Image (cartoon, helix red, strand yellow):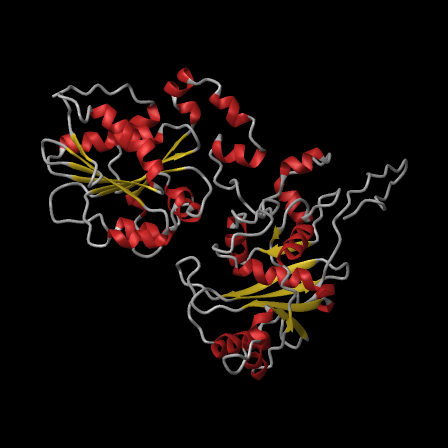
Length: 476
C-alpha cells in the first residue's frame, strides 16, 4: 500500500483541518483552497477512524467528479497495485482497507435531497454550500446521525452569493441563532486567494483575474464581502451610508452625519408621523397575498415632495425564511384593519391601497379583494408589469447629486431590510428578478412604485455661488 504524502497546508487550511466544532464553515472568497481542504480532511478522518462513513456533496455530478472524485482517485492511487483505497464506480464511493468509506453524492434540486432519507453518515462535507437552500441543508444534515462513537460533524465550504447566502451569513457571519441552535457549535474560517500560497506560486495571475472583475463581484470573490455579492438585483439599496459615493461627490461627512441628513442611505431611524408637518402626509398601503408563502403588507407615507417612506409592515413569515404563517385572508385583513384603527401613525387616516391584481380573481368563489372589503380594507389593482416596475424601484433608490434618494425605509421594517438585499437576477431573464426567491416584499413595493411612477434622476451640475453667507442655496 502506498504512503500518502500531503503537501504543507496554508495557515487557514491548518485551522480547517484541526477544527473540532460540530459545524465548520471554510472559505468566504475564491481561491482559498477549499476543495483541497475537503479532500484531505475526508481522507484523514477515514484513516484515523476505522469504519467511519464520510459523505461529500456538491450541486452537480460533473462538479463532484472534477473537484473530488478524480483528484481523490489520483491521490489514493485507486486502480493501481499499491492503491491506498478502492473506488467503486457503481456505488460512487471510496472504500478503505479499514472499513471507512467516502460517499460521493450530488444535490442539484431541493427534491434531490429527498433521496438521502434513511442514509446515515458520521461526517458530511457540503462543498459550495451557498448553492443549497436552507431547507435542502436541513434535509442533508439530518443524515448526520448514529449511535457509534465516531465524531458527528458538518463541514461547509462556500463563497458569498447564491441561494444559500442568507442562512450561511446568519449562522457564521452575523451569528444570529434560533431556538435550538447553539452558537458554540459553529465556527467560521475566512480564507481567500491570498491565503493560498500554493495557488499563488502556481498561478500568480489568478489574483489579477479577480482584481479585474466588476466591483460587486470583486468584493465577493476577492475580499469575501458577505454584504455585497454577485447577482444582487438591488445592489443600489443602501442600509448604511455609501461613503465612497459621498466622497466622489465631494462630501466628506461621516456615516452618522450622513444618516442624520438622510444622504447616500435608504434606511433611516423611524420618526413620529403623528406630529409636526408629517401629520399631513398622505398614507398608502401595498399588499401581496400569501398563505403557504409569506404575505406582505406595508404602509407608506408620502411627503410634500412626493418622497416615499416605508413606515410600517406586517409580514406573514415564520422563523424559516420564505415560509408562510398560513393565515386565512380573513385573519390577515382583520389584523390589518386592527393596526389601522389603533396605530398612532394610521388611526383616523384615509388610506389608499394597491395590491396584486390576482386578488380580484373570482374563479374559486369570493375573491380575496372582496374579503378585504368586508374589513373595510380597500385596494386598487396594481400594475403588474414586472420590468417597468423594477425600474421604478431602481429610480426610487437613485441618489441625486447631493445624495438624496426618492424613498426611505424606516429601520423598523425588518422584512424589507432582510429580503431586498438577497434578491438576485433571473438566470433566464436577467432584467427580471428570480421568482424562486423570497420576493413578496419586493412585489408589493413594486406595486406601490408603479402607482406613483417617476422619471430617472438626472444629476445636476453643482452650482457655485460667490456669496451665500446664510447658506440659502444649500439643500438641507
